[in-house]
Length: 479
Image (cartoon, rainbow, N blue to C red; front, side, top):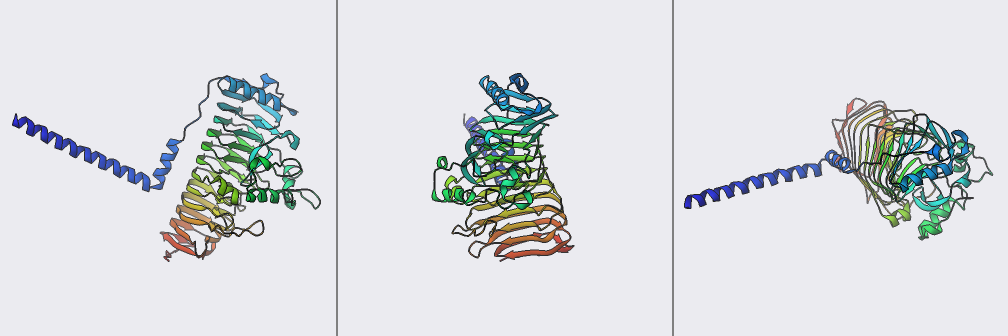
């Protein structure tokens, strides 16, 4: 009896010891996943749910669509989408051919699918675009509907190898920018007229309810191309997007979105390729961006409106993408007031004499915002005009941009980056005395043909680890 109790006690001790070992291992694994940013990224990717659709197809031709490139098919798209949604969802098929339409409004559980030789041409008549709740340059507004729009939808997609053609050029949407390079001349109305852009910004600063910020006709604020507003579980895959009026891919207050294999080729004003705003868990992979503005620009609201919404953009992942023309490859800002964190960029190629910067963060003391934890690795850069990495707290493009909201930029890492033609500076970083740019790390970075190693103002702790610029090893700066 005593022997049995001893054996039982030994077994219990052994069980407790093994349990503690298991818990210890589990704890170590958790610690690693919490401290290694790339393992955190993998956890985010695994957490993003994929779209799933019922195996039913609704051909827009069966709802009256005509593929002649001239007949307006807005009603046919609307009927097909509503019928699909009412029956539990499925695929709304756009067969080969050219289809002219006004805006397309998507519903939950609907996959808008373009066949390989299908092209959707979007109307150039502003009257075809109803007023909806949207956003313009980081400020919420009642304005022209985006060309493709979904609000408060779940499990929704745009797929297929066809073309989405906004038809914008210097004779229509682009002229509204007020830019002489885009067809504008003195006497032509534009977004820059005093009653337009400036009035919207003033309304936001005063706290005017969004429902009362009614723009549209006569205000010349161009519509976004594809906007998913307050959506969840979204897929955009394989389509080619050309000639956008304004921002191109715009996840707004949207979570769990995959953008995969998309080609963007649009060189108009403010033609950012992809602008995740107030959004989380966004995966952008296998895409090509050739744009008139930033290839990817992560946003978080402008000034008072961004602080009102107060939703940071986070867990934004960019993988295996190619950036050609653009103001920046991957950019954060300038509409950034709610902050951005946990950005991951890996295995990308950036190369064009018309690409200004590879990685850029832009803000100012009107925008404010906390921008932190940006991780970049395995980047192949051919040519950039200005610099490889630019971190700027004094971004100024619309006149006076100073206020009382001093931004924070910290924890920026570049690893395994090669650059053939680095432009003017390898690193250009400017902060405030009371808020320096903190903790920049360049590890295993090789930059050739750059005019100056860096331009630094109020920077704290910049680490160069095995980094060579113009074939010379660069030493870290600790202060």
